[in-house]
Image (cartoon, rainbow, N blue to C red):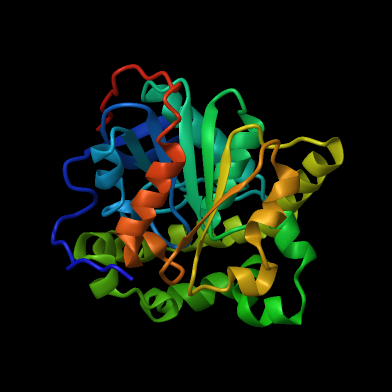
Length: 311
């Protein structure tokens, strides 16, 4: 694993910070920088856009405009009231936010990488906006329907938090009682700015509520949307690479994750394995950046206007 000393800055050095309206009452917070074909990086749970602070500058140096938002409900992005059907925080809503963000920043087309929960939003972008997504990297995840259909006792033992967050009425109360004890963020690995951004987000009970709603949507709305797409034969048109962490549990749970993705994609699925634990962008940023650069390096057909700053 390649780790760097913690940085003392906040967010992503050299990147413009913005808050961009993407839907009525919804704005995404984040940062962007670089020039060239656009790449959208989507963080996982419970991280913020700052998780990419070592990866994003490397991709910018490789010739990309890199856009890193906080997902709806996470970080400093808007946190709307949940609805009984969990549509507000479903992957389709978050993907629509992401597509609208890229349009607002001047990017007609873009490549997208998503890690953990961001993986679900990334492939939903590719399914729902196929004319916008030029390439897709799915990091440490498989389609949520596939994960739930394979949810045996071993899955439940390792990923019990899915069902606690998604189904327990006590989840918000337990987490908000002491968010740092629950999540145990590691400042030495994360970097100081990234750590501070996460700690500030977790201190807001609305963030915890939104993250719990993300999991509730996963067990209901997102699962149903995946099932409808599979039944309809909808598949991902963009070139796709499955990326996973060597020291996480993806192969243990799924064997070959790329094989799980294959029926969902029109083209053969590429693979990349990162020598890290689950938080690959923080634990092995150089390897992660190199894998994403290789995935997106040939996607030069993205057309971008100059980026507009929103502060």
